[in-house]
Amino acid sequence: MVWRHSARFSFCGFVLLGAGLRAFVGFREHGQRGHRGFTPAAIAEQSVQADLDYVLPVGPACPLRSDTMVRGNFEKEMTMVMVVAADKAGDFATLAQQIGAGIRPDPRKQRKVGNDLRLQGERLKSLLDNMETSADFQVLEAYFVMELQAQKMGAPSARTVEKMTSWQGAGILAEAEGMMVPPPPEGVDPVALSRSAPGVGMVSQLRAPRVLPFAEDSFQGVPGTEMLEAKYTKLVEEHRELVSFGQKYAEFDQAGKEFYLDRMTDITQRWHDVLDEARSYDIRPVRGFEAYSQEYLSQSGLTPRGYRELVDGVHALLREKAG
Image (tube, rainbow, N blue to C red; front, side, top):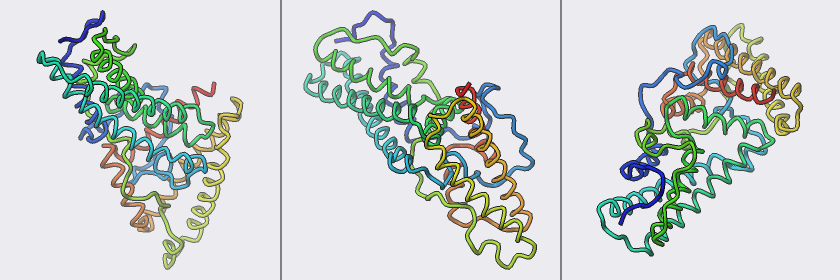
């Protein structure tokens, strides 16, 4: 028994896709520190005076979460859906290997695996659609961070995984009924996908919680830091207000969106300046912030500068979309 459809397709590529999906969730590619994959327009023209040792508390690392982001629980949902989809893709790969070897699988098993894959594809599509069309800036930002980070690392995007998961389900169901297997999704090459770089763990939840970089006593006993402490306190308050205000970002007109992005750019640079000034006084961030930063950088394969470029790139993309 072989797969039947009108499009030319390497069966080996279909089999390897299961491994590619598992790699997308569970592994990262080490050593890729540049920003390959970004177009010049996607990188904000920011001047970073000095490299820091940590991620900035903006973008995915921002501990100030919007009510929409908290209620939606998007990160946990994304992790669960992607892990289940990868597991089901492993079941699919087993069936595909049997078919490729000329062994007819049990149609009941095929239908179960096919329906499971189709369900996960639908769940993933619904989740991604909700994120991409959200009115909340922080949710939109999280969606495009996933997309651009996948592009940067040469890994399949969440949208690609969604399309391929649904296609796998439809294909195995068609095979179970002796029908023609549908062609791959438009714009997606399964063979090329199977050869792509492993994923970067972009949807995995981190063990370390997000926290602010400094505590109330971080500046105590350090002479001359009164102004720095005041800057930090004001920055946290203004950033919290901006996150809350951004819950209606999609309702803003073009000028409103550009103004919001200008404010976010200013907040981002001020975080860099505060952390840099604190370093000049030998004031280290709290352990929780260091732990989150180290885990995020380790999982994503980014440097602190690379993280800043990723967030700036997402904001540049949103600025283009605002036009």
